Length: 317
DNA sequence: GCGTCCAGGTCTACC
DNA sequence: GGTAGACCTGGACGC
Image (cartoon, rainbow, N blue to C red):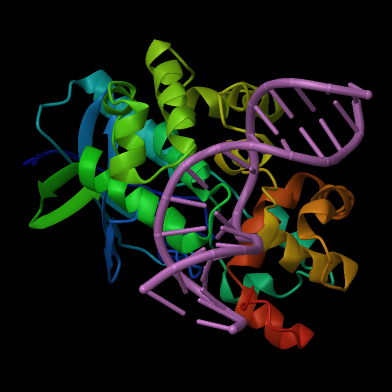
């Protein structure tokens, strides 16, 4: 699908703000789609807005202390003034440009475990998904599968049901829409995307979204516990998935991250990481309170430095 | 090459 | 309200 440039604007994030660390994280996680391209200070990526695929070229023109982002928008259709404004607002939310990290950094400086995780990652913002359905696809495909298999399922979903967006001399592959998945049979998703038992859940989620469900922008305006409960009402979305998707990020401990936080918080590797999740969540809540979401992202993106300081390899789990 | 095990959770039935 | 057991499937591993 060919897209043409329809709009551009500038965002001025609250300092400190490091664009590369925010959208192209050291641990390898993407901002909107695994297929987005990052070169020097520019990200070519995509989203879907009002059911229309949108291409984005976002360039950092500033520094961590004086940040400035130049955004170019590509679409098949012209955007009216109201849509342009809403899209700008959505991007500002998803790029966390209004989010001030200073209070968090002051808190982290007093914490023995975390005191230097911000050295490598100064200006890194956490996770605020542009669109809800892709975040839910990620959560569903991560369930009960090694990362290699999760990647396989996501790749096949994009290959068979996603969109190839061509703009600005780049091609970016983007996630399928809820409408597309809702109109696909469970059997077909099992066969083509190798989703196994998850196919039933993904179709149910797509149907619920199609029938009317709060967008990520809507969820971000809700109290985080209310947003989490809304997400957990979706079929196949439990506490872990809801905490990964919810605005502001919860503390989505799974077996992998539980091993890491077990060493950090309990000073030992738990015999049964799944069993330890409840204890670890309580410990983390007690220690880090409202900052647990940020702590989660900072720790998992700073494992080499933490490993060196603790003398334990946290990167091998 | 073949068999077995189990993974970056969630739901349901049963107590 | 707490919990064992089932759930798809493919890759890792042992033989």
